[in-house]
Length: 204
View (cartoon, rainbow, N blue to C red):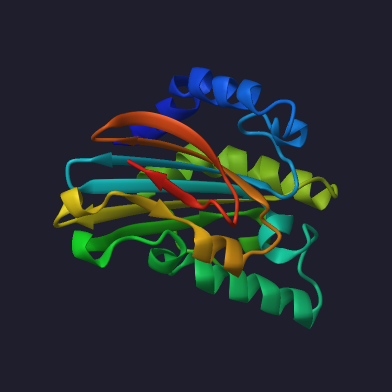
């Protein structure tokens, strides 16, 4: 299943390029390259295959927390805890239809700001990400940008009832997020769409 999510940024480049070209004269500021660190902008990939739904959210930490430095003060630590609590209950954030019967099988959060306080990674991922995490900590200690990467896997008993995602609650929970570049693969193929708080739905 993960190969679908990994393929999304490349499979949808023509779709996104066309959409950006179409809106160039009105939305010049929306030309964010995939995978780049741009404040206010997040990326979301979703793939629905059979009964399995996988969602990945990548965002600069400032969009979710209001800062990117290490949480030293009590107020900053509270903000980190609050953000984690919301990200660990993703059903509301993604507007999953109750009729689809989607049950969360896995939730994994990764960020230098969550170090020492997150879920244990699955064994097969520990060695794969060890060096990457060390590099992230080095960058964070040097005062560079910090990101949050969240991965979720659901098993949906009635996937036909899952017609799409509604991210209005995510925009409400994290007002620092202005735009989300959403990319999805589902029964009707693949598509990419730039979402905002007032246009926060994307269909499979």
